[in-house]
Image (cartoon, rainbow, N blue to C red; front, side, top):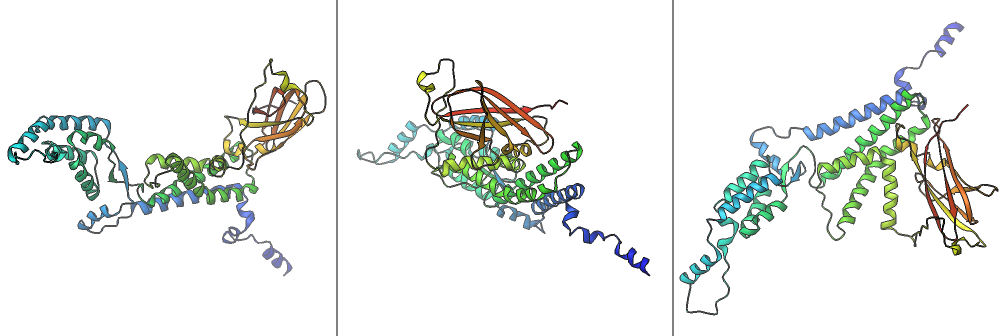
Length: 419
């Protein structure tokens, strides 16, 4: 009886119960499988909402022109513009000139009045060009699935243009066409969010797979960070894209129309989400400046002004920007996440105790280190970093600390530990 009880207590937990435990997802293969499921599910949702057949009958298909979010804007390419230009010029040769139009107005008008207002030569408008219809047909042919109502408004404006400016108008006109992607109107935001999530899921999946294959192992402690990236990356993408549009055209209303290039940028912002956070931190200085943070960098030379070498009772500040360079690393973004653990110091070349530099700045992804009250003189700037995956990086540089601000950049490369 006791044996039966023991066997019951040691029975393995059913799978459907294991999936609700933390230890189950801390196993690297389980987390990898979940990431694959999330990516496939997201792609499935994206394809479903972009491919639904909303029209039951042939007559209903005409309503696709009433779905402005399933569209993008296109312009006439240079080759077609050249052909359209030749059509317009050929038609212009058969149009009455301004002098001929004025002469006709004089013949048909009241010649007894010499104070009549200037004649408006409507005959010179593009609508009177003999090749007007041919030009419009070329545009419609070169832009399949063009939106009729939107195009009709553009063509109405084109007809009112002077014939001499018709080519310029056509070159700058944006025609709305049917598209698989949502690149016009507010639905553009949804498109950006989807492609950002694709990027961040692909990045995490790639990193976990490389960690498993390289033997460094998956670290369960990184799982919350991965989940956080999936949550905050879409907002980062939207803010950066909005910021770019605002900074490029601060006086204009933001145009939510986009192109396929926007989707590429959204994917990259998700794939390199840590760098996107770093970029957002840079934008902070433009939108929310705090004080005067300008720095004057004086490069050390063999003929430095003696006044800059004069001893200062409090010493001088030294700022160092550390960068990591390892083309062989599977995830440069993940590598950059270790940069805050770099050990940076100044070793006096004349002898003495090294001076340690402390991490400065609010962003942990930036390799900014600083030391205050450093005596003037010659030093060897050294930096070393040992990452949790077994990588070792180092670099050194001879510098000269002078009276005033001292700012340097040091790039660390991978080193091999002997023995």
